Image (cartoon, rainbow, N blue to C red; front, side, top):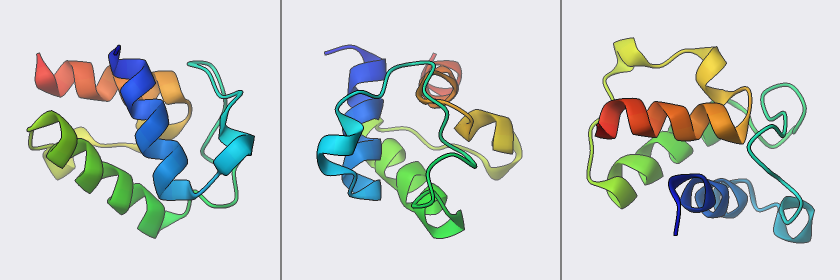
Length: 82
């Protein structure tokens, strides 16, 4: 399973999007477009990404741009994961 697919599943589960999440792709807007994506949800996504991918995402490496789309979240994981 690709990183983007794994990020999609994590995001759908954390935000509890159910069927609404099915059509999300790499360019789907998230931050500001999905009401469920609030500050607590961002923290939960980060924690889940760290656990799932076995990495640690330093606070200094995270910005709002990283949560604009599914693709930007996947790019964050790829950048940290190497």
